[in-house]
Amino acid sequence: MRGIAYGVGVGPGDPELMTQKAIRLIRENDVIAVPGKVAQEAIAYRIAAAMVPELAKKELVPIHMPMVRDRALLHTEHVKGARRIESYLDQGKNVVYITLGDPSIYCSFSYLQSILLSDGYAVEMVPGVPSFCAAAARLNLPLVEWDEPLHVVPAAQEAGEVLRGPGTCVLMKSSRQMADIKVLLRGSEKEVFAVENCGMEAEKLYRGVETLPDDAGYLSLIIAKTSRD
Image (cartoon, helix red, strand yellow):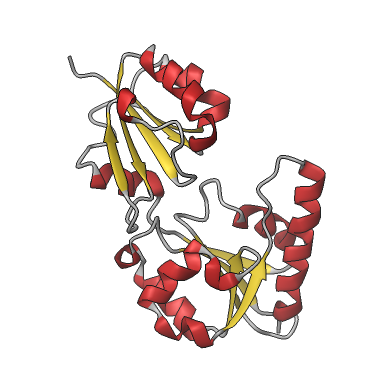
């Protein structure tokens, strides 16, 4: 019997936002895959370890996920990661891959999932609290109301188009293009909010486009809402 690969979301940063199912699966299984070259250095690991201290005694399997745009290189690394997970599944062991936020939203696990499913392995996803929901809560801000649409997009690709439309725009992966994004935000006439390192010790909240730092950290997220005025 082959094992099952689980893609488990551990939430955006606050360990208390982990679901009971995520905690149970980590406790019940001995093989935990973690994105990164060194498992203990991954943010997902630190979040999970705060709620499941016995994680340190599990068999930790680091899965290298390079932050590059070279699709050929990425595919090569994703295949390597999937094959490593498959080596445990072939032994009848389940593998729990822990990941920030939710595994269905811009998540590295989706690439592994595609390969594992193509190779005939069983895969299950366990949702986690999405970063933009946690960020809205930290800002004490409703994301959408009444019939407003919600747009969740990578900041670099689609920000200009969605900012011109109605409703709320969540701009993910915004740190690298922050200076350019601020120009778009100024012309959008939307109310701008942002959270950096949501739920973590280094968390910072921003209100207004002019408060956004050009050197914001990688875990930064922008919420741009249509003004009620």
